[in-house]
Length: 132
Image (cartoon, rainbow, N blue to C red; front, side, top):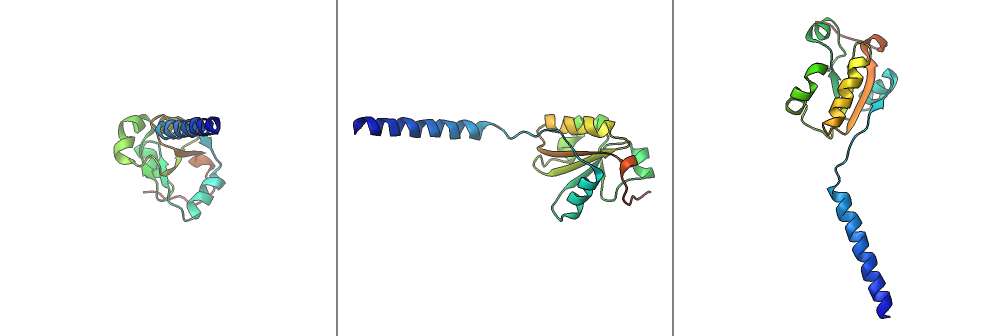
């Protein structure tokens, strides 16, 4: 009887340690490449998201996806936390061809953003865009 109580106590302590250690580990994101179609499905789902254009201001002004905010890839690490502070939000990232969006998405993940999707470049975007 005493041995069963002791084993139960040890088991309970082990569970408590696992839970406490798990609570101290931050949730981390991982790089996720999706298609423009998958990005459009997220946009049309009604769930909240942030559409992030990581090109230059000149590119953004010429043509962009409606609703996008501009944070150029070369400024992500210095501007992200002040301009897009919610690290738990869903981010959809694009650039011109997909190179800068991958780099920016990986930078965001390294900074602690959790749900970051890279859907490549506007050149592959088959849906409506705006200019001006």
